[in-house]
Image 1 (cartoon, rainbow, N blue to C red):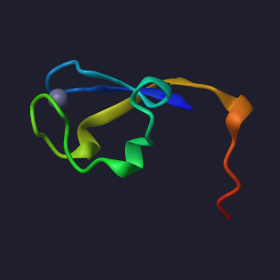
Image 2: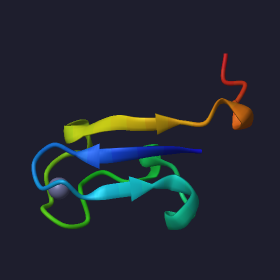
Image 3: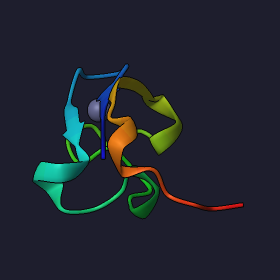
Image 4: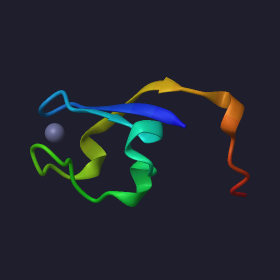
Length: 52
Ligand SMILES: [Zn+2]
């Protein structure tokens, strides 16, 4: 699980709190900007997904 921040509005998307992955959303819940506005804030390497 990782934490992302929206560069447009500053919204913090915490995958663990939201219960879903950043990949599961298309737009920022607050400002409706596309999800490519999100930048990684914290990466928790303990829960690595094996998507090869
Ligand atoms: Zn936003």
